[in-house]
Image (cartoon, rainbow, N blue to C red; front, side):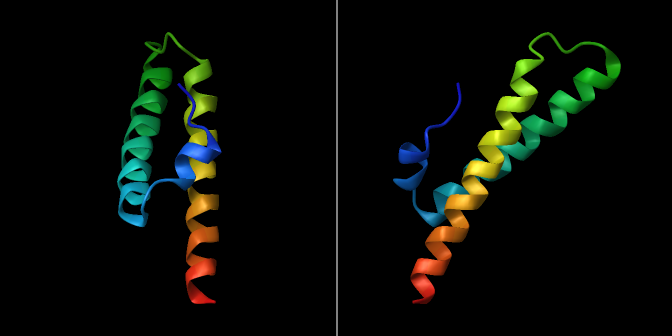
Length: 68
């Protein structure tokens, strides 16, 4: 299930980092499954990629706000 931006904003910096690590691992596994022809849910690749981008964006916004 895709993460909503409002839910991601509620996470702390450590939680964001942990979620990002989990999504990167999942992305690697999905890429591996696609390469070996075992990937069943092809839409999940796109969903994970967008969740990673969403978390990175919000983390950058939070870090910029902390520097002010």
